[in-house]
Length: 282
Ligand code: AMP
Image (cartoon, rainbow, N blue to C red; front, side, top):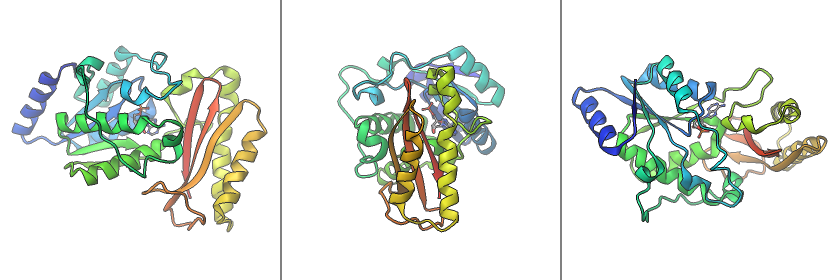
């Protein structure tokens, strides 16, 4: 497995694979890989002749106030061993100045889908995500690209961008991977103290309770959202940011849950230094 850091080299590698008629899968990540990323990589390896894992802490998506760019955990050596073990072919690990030569003046913005949920408190994040993913799509020209359903809004935004800008790539959403106690795996879980880590699984327990309530006939989105916020209020360590029921495709709020899997309950909760997001299909 190769670690590639330059644009010329990744382009040359992709050109070679295309000449050989190989299909290419892309797994975009910010590194510090865990089994959540692993599940995307495994699916990519199963479905493509060659797999590129991009490992890039994208500064452009950290430009809202109070973001954790400096502290974001990094470990290229461990990531390389992890990818190699799973059968990826290349880690693409460019330096920020390689991806963003100065001055960098071009951005990709998606409207509406980006406006609520995480887009409300992190207004620049999706511009950063869409710009970097567009660049990766151009550089790597993957047949398929893999995104986790944990970041449900990101997945919806990327699907819309791909459709609107005619990227010739299949976007594949991969199920959320959780710790045994239900906490969604995340590189940011390393920010949690032991005490915070102990209460964190409550987020998923309350999401599951919402799903159960829907199965028992509750369809009122406002009731479901307030029940989540009320449950979070019982643990003083939690500082919930939002709990919303949205359409999975448009990310627009719905008033009534249809119960056909088209909606999800998406939540963001601050817990100590970490901002945890999670969701459940209803
Ligand atoms: P990140 O490195 O956090 O930007 O994540 C890179 C990709 O891995 C994104 O598409 C995430 O949605 C996905 N991902 C991260 N954590 C998980 C998880 N626990 N389960 C499934 N996918 C995940």
